[in-house]
Image (cartoon, rainbow, N blue to C red; front, top):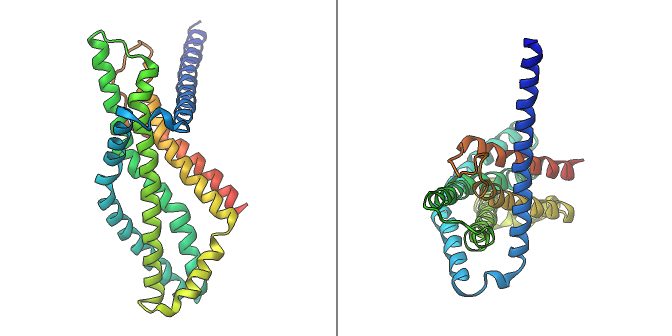
Length: 268
């Protein structure tokens, strides 16, 4: 009887975990749909206090991160550019160095670490702040209306995260392209025609579309996944603090899925 009881308890625990995971992901999907609908309705945030809240969150999510992210991105890009260029020259494959750099650095790496940077520095701390606020309101007996919370708190933070990821990825991509030109051709303007032709051969219409969609979906994942988890009560109906590692793992799994789909679209 004991093995049967142990198996029953094990399957019951797995069932509860699967149900909790399903409910958590369903909350993310529903919250993402609601935020997307409100984001596509400018009248919900284009006037009055709501507009000021959105502008404040956009500034908070972008301005403090911009300088350090660009410096870090430039240093990482410069190191990778030097490694790729030196390796290509040593093997006599210098004609492929530019394409490899653009594909690996601009198309793949920059959107990924821009999304992760915004997630770690803004989205996840903001989600924890929202959860602490909901927990404090619950202790004080204040009932939070989901619709009001969505419009006044979650929507401005989500729009700010989307804008921040898109802005940082765009500026970092420009910086990487400029550093690539200077590393490969130096300060001579004569390499500009060949450089623009090589970059243009990489950014075909299909690749450009996949790159734009991937960056957009990265920004939506960073905006929605942490906030959806912050607004979801636990099994006891409370808003206790959740593990940052588990929340980051959930977000990273979504980002990784988007990256895999984009790689399939680009190379298969």
